[in-house]
Image (tube, rainbow, N blue to C red; front, side, top):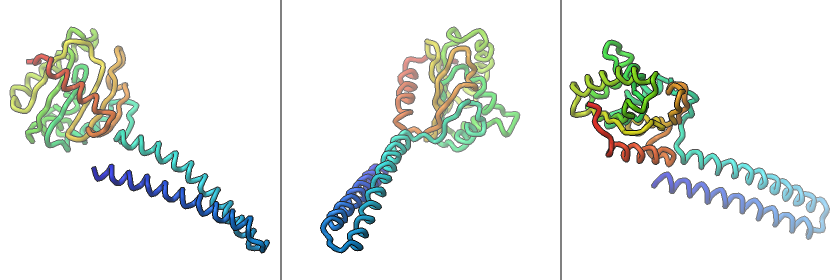
Length: 235
């Protein structure tokens, strides 16, 4: 609510400034045409011209500002050309304290990067579960996967069963019954979303880093909850 109020104030102030500039320019033009003294008349003419130019530049800047505000409202923090930024994913998982949601293809790479108890730099998910962060993972049933992905799904399922046995109160994984088309990783307020393309590895696909209040990511979160209700447990 505070942010909306601040945005309204900024917009109204900008409109007022533009109005004052053009009003002053009109007044100076009136003086320019009505003052009999040539030197004073030239001064008013110069001031009017300068204000008109400044007003036009401000109008162009205002157009850019409004476009930037639209982008800011999307809450986009970063656009990733590839989803293999392990450092970024680890950072948001490590900071989580309440909930982690994962919507993906096999989750094989997710577990390899963040659920390897043998390496301290690859156990962010294990540490999150140790903090009693609730983790929900949503994946396609193996029958919908490509031939290349099925072996990875089998390995991932072993890790899913292991985590479920250790952290049953905080860890849950379900299968939905259709081909995957979206990817999502949410850790509290931080969220990364993107598409899943057939025959293109997940790590080579793009993603958008935003937050859970973004109007861009709201449909992804609704989609996750809708699929979760109908999905079946993996274990």
